[in-house]
Structure formats: structure tokens, C-alpha cells
Image (tube, rainbow, N blue to C red):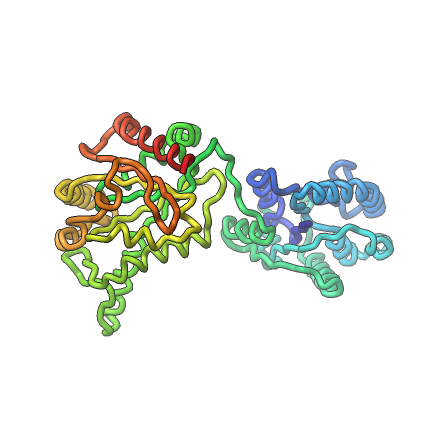
Length: 426
């Protein structure tokens, strides 16, 4: 695809394209504005030396078009800052009839983009940012901008352009996201080696799942990949989804309709609708389907279940889309230890003033007093047959609680190495 990014001066076109060049080096070729490139290399005044500028533009156009064709032939996306119709619009605003005549003659043979992305903002924003840029050589007056825009709009209308509008008067991250989407780019991280795409991290509440994730996040990417076979980490946890249901119940209660899924239990909540548990698994999958794992990435899917068939029921809900790429790590702690850590975590978090997600005693006893993991996976490691797919698993006793980096490494590096071998040999 060949894309041109246009818009009023100083709206951030060059800056956004420099980010795309840096973060998508194997996918895009970013080309600077041809007019500005010619003016800077030849030392031409954009407003006073119009004839000389036109000559320089046309002289450079064949080389620019060769670069575009070569990049497209190599399967790259070409993103070009501005295009010659923008310069023609400025020529019209400045009364440069000579360039306009040349443009109309050559227009049918110019290599035009497939898509145009316009940064949109009030002229006042452009003028303010021009002053902030403090480069009078490229300052354009409000009068010229007001004359230029209608000409460019008319040109796009005649061409039937595929024109995407991006609001530029907002935070830069939002602008960058829209331009990335318009260009159809997807970030591809540099893989540090072969890594597990999906790691299902299971265990009772406070079994140490969050602490393990925190340890893994603090490793360097190279060490995490080489020693633990995990890539860039993304966590998919069903607890925030459950909490949203609790908060929604609060709102339904205030609205006089009654709670749907939970009831209050002291400062926390207890689940009253057993249908919540399969719902959470299906919602996790829906979210992951919208944002699938990328090369070099590991998605840690974290959840806890309790009951005589809890993990069997939950794991059999997972789609074949995920299971062939998944491995399971279960952190094994007793119910008593789970409750002890649950209380300790609540106290620590409350003292630190951060949101706690401890489970009330009533919910712990009713839901998590027992689970079926030992029945489902009776050996320390092996494969679970899920929907005809062999999914590797490893059970790690997580008592005593690791409290140092060495303790985490000693316990989990061998376990993840084993999981990786099981994954490779499934």
C-alpha cells in the first residue's frame, strides 16, 4: 500500500512518521516530504523562489517514484509525507500559475497514493504549533491556509480519493493509534528465541500467581526468553472482569433492580450466580480473539477455580484456537496456606493504600476449599486431553512462598523449561 499523510503545518506529521519508521522498520518505508527535501537540499526559499523550487521538484520526482515502486515490489508499505497535490494547493493559494500549469500537464502520469490520511485541526492550532516550532522558514500564514484548503478538498473530490481523517488536536498517542490503523500496521516484536504463546497460570487465590508474574516482568527480555521460554508479557486475568460484574451489581442495586451475580460480603463480594464462572472464560477468549498473540509475545492467562469439576469445566471451554499454543502451570498450595496468604495480602495492600482483591472467607470456603486439579492432572507433569488436543501441564508446589529472585528462579526456571519441552514434543 502507498499512503500519503497530509495536513496543515506543524500538526505532527513528521513526528508521527518518525515513530512509525522506528517501530515498524521491516514493514514500512517512510519518505520525507518531497517539496521540503528539495528546498532544504538546494537552499531554496519556498515562497520567493517558486520557479527554482518547481524545477527542483520535477527533477527529483523520477527518483522518488522509483523508490516507491521498489518498496512496493518488496512488499513494504510506503508512507509518504505530503504529496504534490498539496503543493499544487499552496501554489493556487500563492498565485503560482506556472507550477499549476506544469502540475496539470504531469498529473495523469504521477504515481499517486492508494490512500490519503489527513491530519485535521483548526487553523489556530496549526498556527500555535508553528510558533512553538519556531522555524520561520516554514511558517505559513492563516490567509494562505484558508485559501489552500478548499483547493485541496476539490482535488480529492475530483479524484474520488480514499481519504481518512485523523483528528490531530488531541493526545499524540491517540493520533498515532489512528495513523497506525489507517496504515494497517501490526507491531511485530523481535523474538528473542522460541517462546510459549499462551501460558495458563492456575491455582487457588493467593497461590502466588501475581507474584510470579511480577518476578517475570522484572527479568530482561533476553533472560526471560532464554531461561524461561517466555516472550514479551501480556496478562489476561479474569478477576477484573469479575470485579466489573460486582460493580455493575452495585449500580443495579442503586437503581432498585436488585443484584444479578453477587452479594456484599463485608468489604468485598461473594458470587451468587454460578453462571459467572463459564461467562468469565468465554469473555477472556473473546477479548483474546480480538487481540491475538503476536510473534515473540507470551500471553499469561490467569484464573482460579474451585469445586469438584471446576478446572475440568473451565479448561474444556477453551477453543482450539488457543489450546494448541497453550501450556498450563498450576501453583499448588493448600487451602489453609491460600487463606493465610489471602489475609496477609489484604493487610499489606490496605496499609499500602492500593486496591485489594482478597477473597472473603465465606467465598473461600464455598468456592475454593477444594478443587479438581489433582484428579484432572494426577502427575507432576504431562498432558491434558482437551477437545482432542494434548495440552502440556506442570504442577509446582509453591510452599514456602518464594521471597527472593533466587528463590523464584530456583523454583520456576526448571518448571518452565519442562513445560517448554512438553510443548515442543506434544
